[in-house]
Image 1: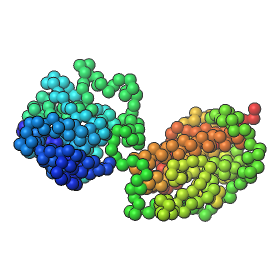
Image 2: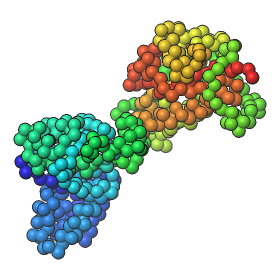
Image 3: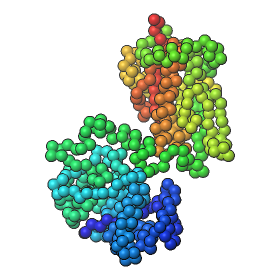
Length: 475
């Protein structure tokens, strides 16, 4: 089982035109024209496009056609293709494909140094496996490449690396695996930071202070929801255009039992409100409430100023607007306004205790249920999260209809949801400060409990933020 490393174009890359001295390569990032090519270099490109070969075989092919003088140009060509992320590198042993390394970033350097006999490695704590087609894909936010593991042997080797292993240990633990194959496999994964070296004291290089303070899911979310360290689709790609209809800008009314809320005179408020800088400088979280609870008029004014729908804009594909959008007082990525507001009322003059959905177009509270064990649990969780001495007067729960964003965006949909939560939080703080109310945003909440409390599908809509509101102590 002698290990062999094949070089080939990655599956998304193809040679679409080849003529004398010139070739056009189609890539996910556009077409690349390679000129001043010799017959040997053209043959090398055709080989890379049709399944690949070892570097030695490609070199021999060029030497047969051009002579040794062209080898320097071949190595330059391979290096250029590698730096552009066009090549994949496949380890084969005894005809069995073990792993394929695919770059995810331009400038990727493939230079797997052989692991020494005494070097022990183990899977990075940031590495993770997922399925793609019939193969496992091993990735890490620390790595600039992914490893595709198509067969049982490769998967078995990955599983063994949950514990520290030298390549001889790996060979001994997997029946029929020669040491040189185990060494080549570990060298490939080490080059991609999918496995890391274990020190004599058992520590890993990734336990230095900056990395030690990253949780796995946080670093993965950060690296995959921004550009720079991956090659996945990103941005407004409209992945479901023509496949799944987009959600409407407004959620259908959830109840016929509604409370029409007070609407303030915005033009009068523009004249009478406190100065913006005063509001901004005095914004703070307040966890003490006045003896008189917030009332329906104050709640109505707050919701109207924060989250009402000012207008609806219909889809217009001719203007590249493929989905219905709206305009509201706070900003939202792509005007999607995926966020919905639910109001859990503990005590509010003029609004019975219970849970409501805010209808931002009609400015109504639609009653979903009376005060019950779920509502009490939501209020109690908010009390503990804010370290209050009593339950909050009003808890506003922000949920996201995720598909409003994921229908349009790739790679950044959930990150955009959280940014939308942040700007809505700030809007809530500023309005509450202007109104003399007691606001406090919360850092976490129970999404499962919320889904149970109003009977929604967790993957279609889920809570992503909580904000408590009450009357302010007189000073």
